[in-house]
Image (cartoon, rainbow, N blue to C red):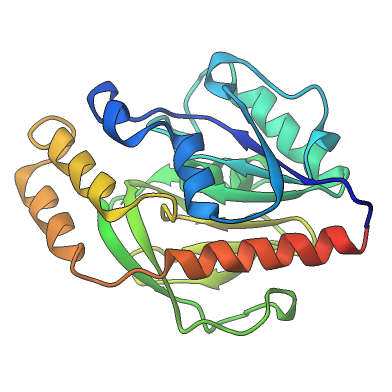
Length: 243
């Protein structure tokens, strides 16, 4: 590998409520904080404002954030984002998808995303990950435990995608696209204070009281989001060292 720094591009597809952003920052900032120490240059692109990279080769790893929008909704930036995802795959660039990112990558590659009739997944969810775990990602964690905030789900994974974490509530909790992408339905970038504040911010408007209450109860579950960050970094370093 050359002496150049690793380049990480963050595709911003959503924003926190304004009153929470003042305290917790934006989603690209949360992603950078979650990733922790890594010798990399981060660049963010406001995809939801139609700001796109000029080439998929501008980064070694692309991270697609969460969003309040549905992958299946008719927004001007959805189709170009799907095209960019396919370009990144065809250019052998790595990608990591978070919640909406998980869903839009699946949809771009032929999967099906819908609003689930199972309702909301809120608070820390544990996704058992002992099935189909790829050797490329190292040791098998017993579970991926991260924040959830979603109604939409990948209901049909695209051809070639491998489900590596699953629950009864969310069949495709994490997907592995060999040589290309790892995606998770949850939010590893969400800290517990932010996730809890988000639930309360949406109480009585987007979310019913009982849903918020259940989500807050789920905060007692220990997460392992730092494990997932380390896994992504190790995979990225291993891949770029061969290039």
